[in-house]
Length: 129
Image (cartoon, rainbow, N blue to C red; front, side):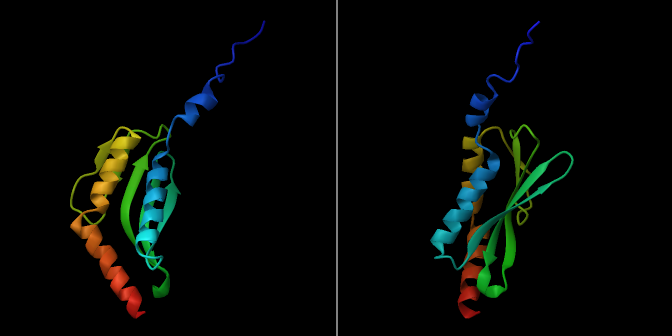
């Protein structure tokens, strides 16, 4: 008796999903381009038994690779929903149900005065290092 293959469509399904970490990697690249590489974006990942956590950091190579966490995202194996946490902000985490919602929330948080001030301060200090 031939068994039915439950995995027939898995590659197609996977190709339609954008992992949340890709949103942070894109922002990391944009940060480096915006500052001419003086302040670089880096994404660090951590895994525990339940969640995958990805942190977007602003890194200054001329300051001995000093790094500041700008945003953190956390999700389970299913990827969505994803929770966005801004460590510099006194707010609860924001739940995003899809990649478009995540990209909007991340862009809004990174455009905030707090993050712009952090990055501008790093840029000013890097020029003195």
